[in-house]
Length: 241
Image (cartoon, rainbow, N blue to C red; front, side, top):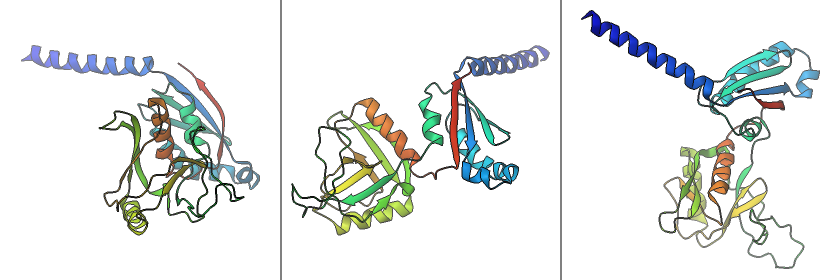
């Protein structure tokens, strides 16, 4: 009996040791954020930093493989992340958030008119004139991920909307069957397919001439679309281990 208890305890100790070893062998990154000048000029820096801390921690916790450590140093946040190897990941997370919009293609615009045109994501694709009204924004994106089309095997991006976005997307597609709907990310058109029928399930697949890396990058940007810009500036991102 005592032997069994000792063996069980030994397993716990070994497991804990493995966990510690894994933590120290994972890539680690330190991120330094500085409070926006407008807020800094207003004074009350300790109170402002304290009020922003929860938002910074929430954003940071989704980046690594373990819970992030956030500390305040004057007008700066110093964040320790584990399991992050791409330094652009925290830069994107704490920089300006991507902008997503759905707009109808202006089919009445003449090919060589002076109507403003929106460039395509792929440089080889033509720019298009779009109608001004934004029908759906990125605030309603619940999830986005890189995937593969089941028929062609080509890389695609799959999006799922929240309940409000699902209802809005159903209304948009129901009211505009036969028209082309442009999906715009950061001012560039990802795709502009024709709406063949109402889409009521809240899911969307974005296709294009994407590589796997393209699909992963686009999905990573789309996931961030629902976040608000934080009033901070990324000062430094560096590897610490």
